[in-house]
Image (cartoon, rainbow, N blue to C red; front, side, top):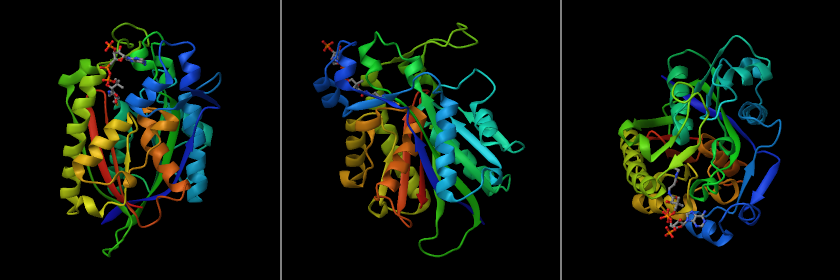
Length: 323
Ligand code: COA
């Protein structure tokens, strides 16, 4: 039996950091409101020359460096994004070209904020069926380019960035603490389209469009769906919430993180929180938070880590791995 083992991680942020106070100079909002309702204190916004593919490439290089792998040993690149450089081709192919590794598999996955969970689970399935030996799974976004900067209810919530994991297929050792992805679950409910969507696209308006969200209703669904999928993955793995060392959640809102942890009976100290520094970076937030957790010395080899996310569609999912 094959398992997908996390060999390395990396992340990248745009050069420009924008505090709540700076944002309040051009949007009708305050630092107090944003911090109290969301936990966000700052976000990074892409500038000229910084794109989803360029951030993804930087994160991928850092992850390869962490794993100690050459780029040309990677047979599969999956990039989760809803803000690709172009409508087509997939931004994953731009990353592949920038890494100088033509010939393998490269494609994008689009599941908005749960995109990284969809990409991770797809890569895991492909590695376990032998389609590749090593994979780069990346989440990268430039949401600043689809925000309506006149809409204070959404534009204060998001930021840009990228995170990446390197996975390697390894023969499973049936022993306590063996590394790898243990169990995953994904879901979607397309009936909730209108609660979180972009009001444009190539086949409807022929424009890129702007993000629209009914925040309060998204919040309510997020807590219920995430608690359900976390239990489903734990049951699938035959493990209990107490055995989890770290939860690496999608970073949308500090209150969602708190409420989800409480529902599972997990202490807040076990939750990696980066929403204060990065805001909501959509598909990038989970690998960014994981890399932050590893590099800050919190997440260690052997730890049991739960990844989880929920986003537009709705889509949601979770994945449990021994690091
Ligand atoms: N600055 C100041 N005031 C703001 C504001 C801002 N940036 N945005 C909204 N407000 C105001 C509203 O106009 C409203 O004023 P009113 O009562 O006079 O009408 C008030 O704040 C409350 O708005 P509401 O939308 O009910 O606030 P909320 O407590 O639900 O918080 C969110 C809003 C968006 C922070 C919250 O709903 C949320 O986080 N939802 C989930 C969003 C999410 O995670 N999405 C991504 C999922 S992938």
